[in-house]
Image (cartoon, rainbow, N blue to C red; front, side):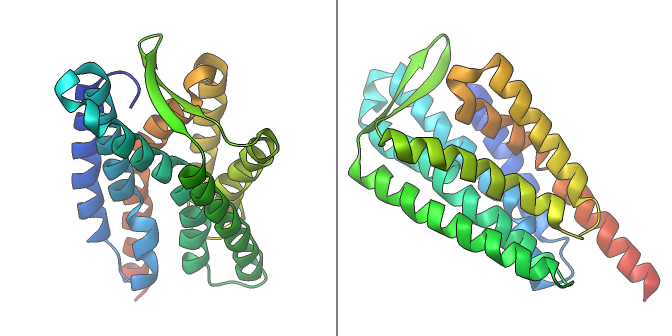
Length: 218
């Protein structure tokens, strides 16, 4: 995350381990996408650790572009499609399933646009104010629309979902987004992803409670 390489690698290691454990808590393959969120966040945090190394150690400077693109792929392109996809797989009720499919398709369109822009336009990272700032040269109209769509597809599906305790996860994520926007606006994507990564360990608790109730009902 945007505070130091050590913090990024530490968070990445913890989350990757937690993610592996969480994927083992699933009672159905349909829960795997949701359970894998901590693992994916862990990989993302590790990628930002390499961004830090490339910016602070000359011998690792050649890693900068690859590490920057890797982090931005997770932050900009993966989450807009992965979150609604995970919520869709968990959903069993209509018409919520149809609504979530709509969010998934919207997220997919955004992700494809982000992937195109990430490959077609110049992006770079730098240390600014003791944090990592990502400089992106995407067209302004796309940035304006994508920011709105990003928030919608990463938060609203969690509120729509009937999966137990998913709304609490969404509330915590939304709160983290607001606080990050207030205190860390210049480094929003980096800091929010860090807090979202740490909060993703809540997923373990959600799945554990859900599957425990299923076992008791059985």
